[in-house]
Length: 225
Image (cartoon, rainbow, N blue to C red; front, side, top):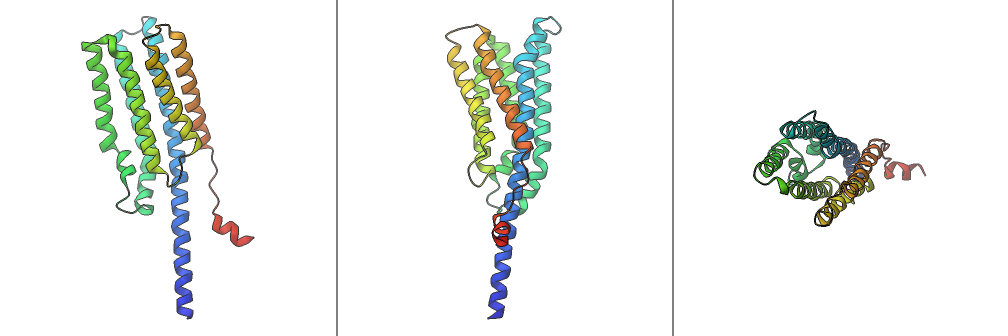
């Protein structure tokens, strides 16, 4: 019976250890997503506000603006891949082998081809039908929001963190509202307000995620009571 008791203790300890590993991994994931929010907020700011301002001042031509945008979002992809590298390695230990879809989804084998395809679509639109560039750009932003939501659902075992919901919701709403506004007005005012608020929301989400403390474990807290 003592052996059985020992087996039960070992099994309970193993279950607690696995739960702690998963909880810690999701904490690391949350912080890594925080980097993603901040980097993409900077990328959005440069492409939506920075590049048009520089182009309007005559510092660069249209081709130069496209190159700047490509470099900016390319650097963003590199930082994102770096942010998730440690977490992907940890997930290989804490996740079953048949449940690593999110790890592949956030790896370079997926993100690099997607980045090439997105920039290729933008360049082709500029070359062949420049008038459609705003619509294509907004549809791509909406696609990014959908992709992020799917990746977030795979990253966390329970509900996605509040700051993640704020980031995805703000990007989705701004994209949809901007698409609707394309047929109503060409004034930059509404777009500035929409995307300015989105960038602020993403900065907040990133800062909030990066400052979350390491979570406590319920098993340890209960045992001391």
